[in-house]
Image (cartoon, rainbow, N blue to C red):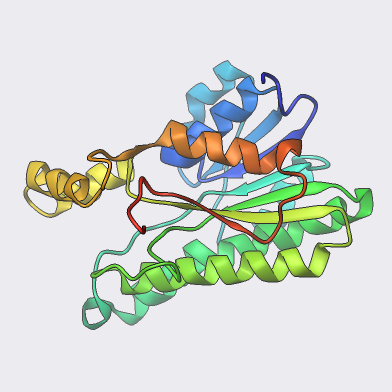
Length: 245
């Protein structure tokens, strides 16, 4: 089915690379009017070639988030894909890294949802999709204490919002990706000092024998944002290649 988001207005955070970028492009292909936000403006420059409005934004800056959501116009869809993976167990996590994980991965979503929700409720229509992770309340992953905690909080936030607005015409769901081949994953592999070995290890833990792709995750987000998922709210869609079976 083509053009599933025709006429919809969408805001996608974390659109500079990875799942967020793939989602912004998929939304545009499906007919949505898209504002794509990222902290790093240079990563967004070529999205204008696809009819997407790029926006430099720090999603942890509450006043800036409010201004950005207002400027994007009446939103039908909000996708929270911005995030940061801190690599380290609880004994290896500093106060600053813990706080940054919560700020970038959870508080940012609180800020965008708080800004977008009044307009959605006024129009009694809207779809919110939060990118969580299987490394959350779904399963624990060693060396991801702060990250896993923050993504578990994303799931809690998703369910709380869904319950609050269930009678207001707004849906809120989460995507929980498994290990996905993205620039962020490659950067983390390189940071180990042996990128090839790290990528092999990432792949080895996948029952399907391969990593997920950003396009596969974007396709799942398109579904959650579309009217096809109109009877779905407060749910966590796990797309992990069988990692948590």
